[in-house]
Amino acid sequence: MKRLTSTALMAVLAAGAALADTDIMTFAVAGKSPGGQPYTATVTLEEMPQQGVGQGDAFKVVWDFNGSKLEGVGVVAGSNRKVLAIGYILDGQPGVSVMTEAGESAEGVWVTKTSNGIGTETWTQVKGGGQADGAVTYERAVECAAATSFLVGTLRATPGADTARIDAYDKANSAWIIKLGDVGADKPMDQRISDIQAKQAVYAADANGVAVATPVADACVASAPSPG
Image 1 (cartoon, rainbow, N blue to C red):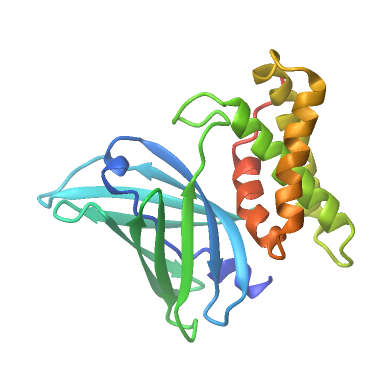
Image 2: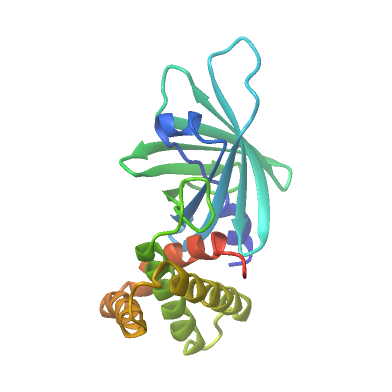
């Protein structure tokens, strides 16, 4: 990823009126560079105190791509709650991103002064895992256990795969397996295993299974329950 690791973070999320209702929100990101290279990340939006004469909301935005972090500042106009714009500085160069709410996700574009084109991103809100939007459900724990374990197995069999990323998925998988035993205590162990395997089979049967599972797994890493 190298240079893409930095430019991949140039993105924006619009979550409509929900932005005004939650102080901190976390999202899984799936995007493409101007050259078409896919990437994933996680992003956190934190509402900033309202001030000034204008109508709208401001947010601190922190992108995290495999441990590499970048901050931006975003604003939502009071007259249009579906669009958020973010300004940032990357390696001393200015950039801008605009993303629009699209159902339960958001889609948009980003560009920097030196990116030689326009990239795209899709953001999906992370739910559960200790986030502010509610308790972890059995379904969420199954989903996270399946996505992380699928990628661990697939990447370990892939020559040249990022070992640090594999370790991150593996640690998150262990945390979600433990959590599954908690939220699924009323279900037999063989049912829990079967439910995970069924989700894994969906990824395995998809020609783009790794690309589909990656943003899910990245979100699960970001929201993995704390041990104990």
